[in-house]
Length: 254
Ligand code: CIR
Image 1 (cartoon, rainbow, N blue to C red):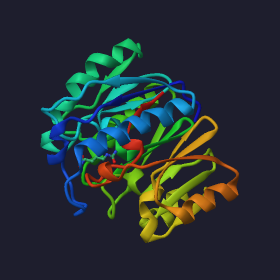
Image 2: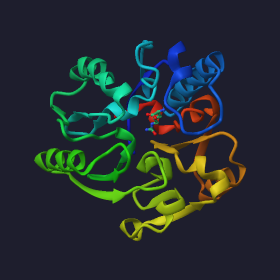
Image 3: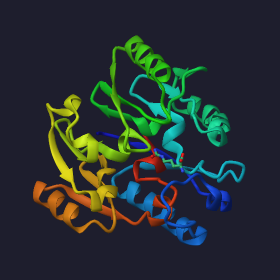
Image 4: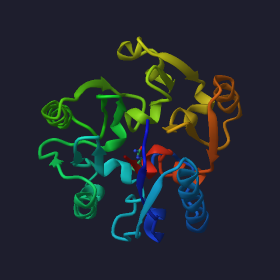
């Protein structure tokens, strides 16, 4: 959970036609831009040097940059997003990653993988098998991780868009989870902070250095994290939630 940098991508006006199952209406672009700026400020408050990429109007969902790459201490992996409208998003990240990583790997057809399905805890990566990530994508990622001395395993995801929609790591031994992710046998060795359905959005938090970023508007989860003694920073991402996006999706951290 020690990071020094993050990459984010500013949302473009086309975001209003991004993919969504949320039924919360279209996002307001100006509010989203402001929220994105606040998100960057929060990452900086955690001590990160933030690289801000320009918006790309051709890709309405490209602000959810977490999905196009998996960053590890030993290599970067360019993913292969399953949503047809997002497939071309990998081009711009492929150009940038060599500035920061010597080893670049790629997920190939017929594998599909979204970074939102990948939860790293130390040298181990939990990979959600979701509507976006297939078993071939997970198999390729595990093979790449092994090559660099890391490990991966799969977790079936049924209720959520991505694994990290339902569970994120607050530390090496603690997860915050909701719905089906609370009971998954794969996570039985962890202490789990359970999040009720009505605050499910708060299961997507980001632990960075000594801070935990959490989405604004979830008072009981905030209280729970406070009891843990964690230093939390709340960020309002209501406009991104309208596109099924959480806090983690908006950045790549390394
Ligand atoms: C999509 O459906 O691909 C975007 N509207 C939301 C992606 C959210 N990403 C994430 O959870 N990692």
